[in-house]
Every structure is written in structure tokens, then in C-alpha cells.
Length: 121
View 1 (spheres, helix red, strand yellow):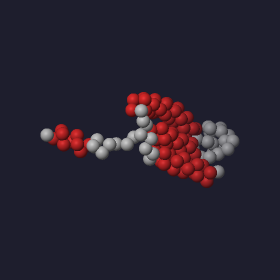
View 2 (cartoon, helix red, strand yellow):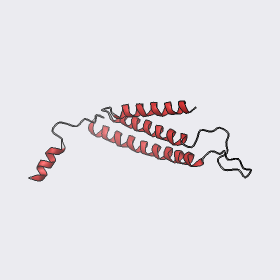
View 3 (cartoon, one colour):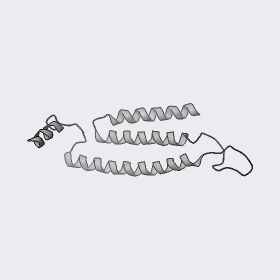
């Protein structure tokens, strides 16, 4: 079970990094979403992978329980990442409609050194 979860985290992370290195807006947004899914899965797995255990301590002396904190953190992270993905999609869509392209290339004459030289003069 741990191997499957670790493999899923690795595959999601690799796919997310690959998509974030693309030169288009929407693959970058999908890459960020994949990375957030990998982090959510990692957070969820950090609470021990246990089946049919209660989320609280029992009064009968059983020391085996599932930690509810990673589950709560994962649920919160899912909601936040969904909202941020929606915001990024809207920003990307607005940029696409404004520029008629979703490329994120920087032109050769549009560097920070040019603005720094202008500011120094």
C-alpha cells in the first residue's frame, strides 16, 4: 500500500513539474493542479495508512487509531487548491483573450536589465 501511494505521489509530481515547464498558460495551470494533488496525497498518507481504525482514541485502552489532523489538512488543501485553480484559469483566460495567444515567452528586448539601465539614468 505504501509503495502504491509513494508511486502515485512521484508520478503526480513528475507530471506536474513537466507541465509547469511548458510554454503555454493552461498546461502550467494543470501542472500546478497536479502538484497540489501530489501534496494532498502526501499529507493524507502522513497520517498513517490504516484501514478500519477509529479517528479518536477509545476508552478501552486500544492504542491504535487514525490521526484525523492530516485528513482535516487535506480537506482544507483540496478546497483551497480548487479555488486557486479557478482563479488561475480566469487569469489565464483573460490573458488569452487580451493577447490572442497563451504563450508565456518573454521577448528578447523585454528584460529587466533594460529597465534597470533606464532607472539609473
